[in-house]
Length: 342
Image 1 (cartoon, rainbow, N blue to C red):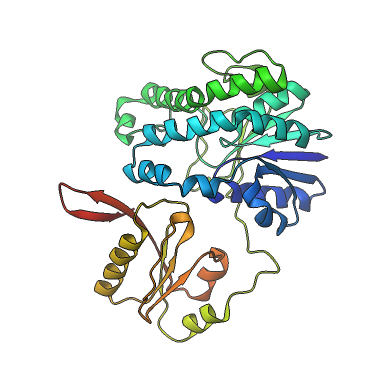
Image 2 (image 1 turned 135 degrees about the vertical axis):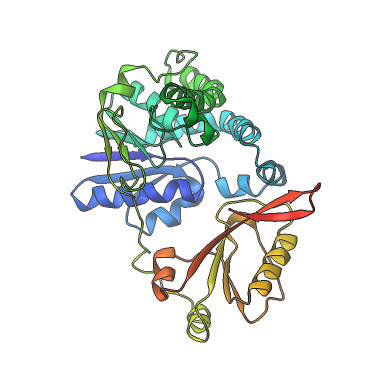
């Protein structure tokens, strides 16, 4: 079977679907991963066919405007900003996706690429599986992930309503772009104002969740849904650690790991200084991963080693005493605090 996985977002959004694609490859299917052009090397290193859609997420995430909005921590402002960018790119994504999906037998997507994939499945009359890495299906068991968890005290109906609200936030931010791509590229009628969540395609096929049932047991009201376990991605077979990193790991106590992923920062130098102060106070050795935050620090102490990208599966196997710390910068002018741990 020829399968196309449509996934848009940052590396954290893309990586689980590479793992899913590898698993499908291993049982005999041909998998094409359709994503942003800057992930070509990552996708190719795992032996999957790559087809790009226009846009470089890293450049977008590192722009001054995006960094400022991400730093605010305001989900609604972040969603509005990304939705505006997605609207501008929607036509290009539809053009690229339409070409990339020719000759495929099955489409798969998660939240990143959800509405694009729904439109492509409709245009090409293809079966489509939803495959998520966080809860997106309405349930009475717990609230939506972005909303306050005290909602659960209001009962199952409030929980379920919170998921519908979350889904509308995602849809309404994408609706105009979706309409443009449907009209100008795919020649489809516009989707309903409230989205396609009640359409036949959304309900016809099974839904997959790359989650652990030990962490999120399957709710009783999730029907035709399968929680498969996490889609973890091992390091590429041709990856080798830098000698300097090996020397650092072998010449001292196991370090703390501090990672920023794709989180942005308007002042990476200040962030680096704050992190170094925290490391000094704890007396730890540390590996500092800059990620897409652009974190930089020229004069690192000997107890700190900075890396750009290292497979976590490899790094965490080097020592059982390795800890994970994710540091999020949070400027608080009124309290004088500059960051908090999350």
